[in-house]
Length: 261
Image 1: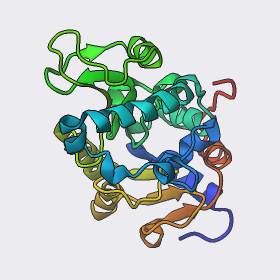
Image 2: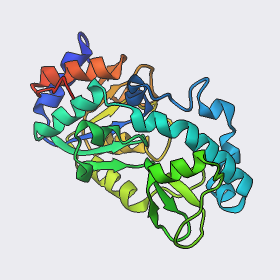
Image 3: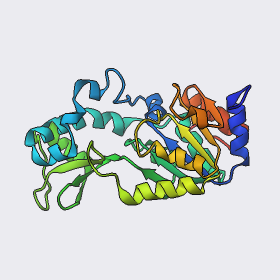
Image 4: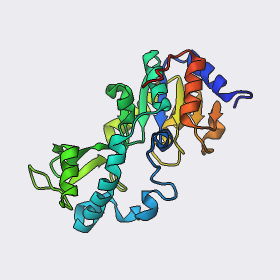
């Protein structure tokens, strides 16, 4: 770890890097008004996530009903949120030609809304902005399904096959997307710098991505309000707000930050 100003030290690492992998977690989006569902008062303090597994969703209409109650509550927050300075800092890294890839644990689509290239963005836990049928895979318009739920359709079904509809997020007990997960680890092995923003690094397999980067020889920067289990292996640790910290880091690196978003 570095002495002195950690943002300046992180900026120097970023300035020298050419193939940067960024991993983001809930902490980058809380500054956009999206609550961390795992925090006290979050959704998972009011609902038991072990009762909302993917297997239960498939088998139980009551579980689907509860799931869609949660979705109806959380979707407007996700839909209406706006990117913050940390999202724009990631865009600045990309526009400087340094971004190898972006992996996010978030389901809010804020990186794309900020201007990140969808082709370079891996939503490893899926997205709440799309709805799919768990039987035939057909996509359905998220707004239209949301209106159906608000109008009293407690367990919306697929127009094509009648199967249960579900937001395209990864639920507890649901298999991670194989292609996206493999690509994330490939990028980790190929990067020359890994930056973690707003992740507690306790949820696997996402938490293993920076471990793979370090194992492959890349320095690691961690920007998070609280300590993480991987702080000891990081070249630089910044304990602070994601937006302010990342703005300073990209400025030190000479990457132009679009303040307006």
